[in-house]
Image (tube, rainbow, N blue to C red):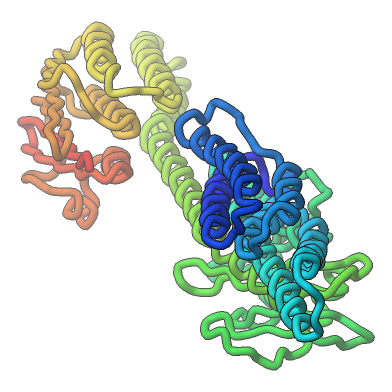
Length: 558
């Protein structure tokens, strides 16, 4: 895996600090063990290198805008020169593992291996040249060379593991960032599966999600080279074996071969290695698979589907145990954001369904009933035209007035359906403007009291409160036969409340009822109840038939 610019900004300071620390330790080792005849040259050389290393580390800490970097070639040159200058093998050993570590951190694996071998031979020659030959010293030289080689390879392994860890963290962050509700479910899954397939050099990736309510499987298939967003296939549960690979409790890898094949895997809960039964032949036919891996994805703490990666072209290498464990880690990481997208999608679908139900109810109870009444009255009017023309003219004028009123009502409904973009800073002005228009157009006295001049209400709550306020006034105008309305909007640290009080005919019931009682008795304005509930609020209705009604909406702010 490659390391992007962000991770290089993390790795380079790590190498800078390590260089300064190692150069300091090497200098201490040199002071402790070097001979007087070469101490000045080697100390001066190493001290200059340490000064450069400290300069780079301090610039990273205190002046990050200054791009001062010691090139890796300079580290190699220092190491080669130090083999010649130093009489101290421990001092060299401090610099050598660091250089190997820096090479492996930057992804130069071949250079790292070559340096480890050359350094082992070089330090043996350096020690041997300065010592009279004796067969008894051969084993000492071999031990020094082997120790140098092993320490170099060990540090190279640690550097490679650090680099791989950072690259994997970057990959997990990138895949997670793909799963955004704003991107849409299909596009999010396409991008995430494409990245996962690319991580394993596979030609295909698949997500199969089981919906027990609908008794269907939703299957997304993605080819990383394909940039078109396709929706999921919907397949019956009878084909679950093909996409879920029989058991969702097993993480598995399988290679098809001559009508059979072999695989490995384990229980996803305990990690216990299992003898894997043959993967379904239907999966091979569905994906034209040569090999595949399958890992379970959870929703609500239970298995709900599978993520698959599939080799369908020429098999370049087998999946390893490390591949399957890394695949499990990826799927566990993307599980929560993917579940959130599914939940948000479901909530949005329910909200749309609820809004459609409200519109349908309003149309049925209002305009459609009026149109049906108009149809009946027009039939009666047709008969009167021949018998009582004068009375027919009066009835016609009444019908025209009714049509005019319903046209205004329909216009209001269409206006109310438009999305309201509202912030708390605009709430006071908009409510006062609407009250003024309402007084002018409908000749209804509206007194509006807003206690706080500086409202601090979340935008979503503002939108719903304004819709409730607007709908309440329209309901009063249409049904209550009121002459006066008092509206109060108040806010404290815990909640915001809206009170609408009129002197009209009231509801058909008498008394004070909270949201739960209104639901149980099927009383009160349904759409207002739903809007209040949508933002975590409650509606209370107090009715006195013939003497008006009071609606109180309370919404918690935390």
